[in-house]
Length: 496
Image (cartoon, rainbow, N blue to C red; front, side, top):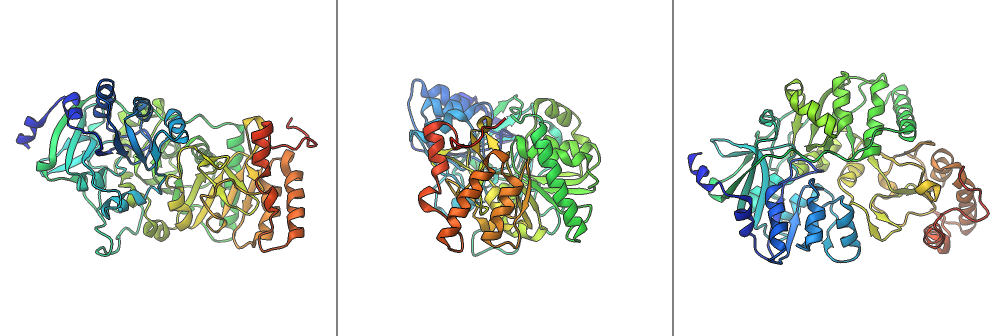
């Protein structure tokens, strides 16, 4: 559209339009496809012109943007997810407000007006088509709802992102609550929307030209413990096949963000499972490794988040994945209707789990926010099988990831089917609370903590109840950690 050329501006000019108290909807989902130039200009502007804004995104941002915005003091409220240590510290010290949301809920909150108006949508794209479609870059996230509901739109056209991304997206708007029909997606590889985000050109106030690749992901390679976890997960899948509940093609897989979940997925490379499908939020290195060895048939996600080496390989050879990939808005990738219909096997990461299967994904010692619940709740509540993975200990063995009672509950025992650590796996399906306890202790807890857990449960049994607890001791392990630096009792053997 010729008239849009007249709206090309610098990042600094676009940033000058942002006023104190505004709400900004930024593209970006787990360090991919994030608006880059205008947020950086806002940080610079704040050095001489202090202001505060609300920052809504899809998930975490790259380029240290969350860090820089937190340090600049420009954020009043942030949602729905972040993963930056500096921002985490500011949140936990109460210097900025953080709304921890299920990732499928943000669009609904905006659509219903709960979060108030979005003043500016600032989204990264690889193109704007003649018929008024913004072609997103490496993530969709919440960009489509931001563009739809914002009063103004700023597009960052990033020439560093591969042009071959055009055609990869499937943008579908489910309409307002009470006015929508079924989402007619019945298989992972179906398309139900458009290849871009439809926008009224009048809303595009400015276009900023950029040239910067995404930040690489921060995942670390698989280690011995995550390899053991992958082996245990594969053993569980084999039992499911043996029981006739799955075939060697399994069911569509979902894997959460992070090194542990990525490493566990990576373990499928050497397995007998094949012709796999992925229906997830983030497509990490392991997904493309599985593509490259012929294990995956099709993958649907919300963003592509890769290590530096994998990013160079994938984006320079994107054509080999054409027809095998699609990126959707996060309210679609995480939609309960679709998760239930497709029958996903969901693999997400826990900070800690307790002897009854409740899982804490977000809060250290019950009070300190880590990153946020992300999409794990969307999937755990609605999938075919909800699997949570965690190493059995942390901090050199000072912390047990299996505790009497989690210090914060993100996923109740009702939403947790399988727990996997490097020690083994606990299949909790169909088990009453008292049946779950010994399965979790014997299969998932580290040997150094098993006797402590057994003693706690024996004392709890003497109190009775459907879910026995010693209430005055239920969080004693966390108290001991805070006081002594370890959850181990003094009489217990230390980890060797």
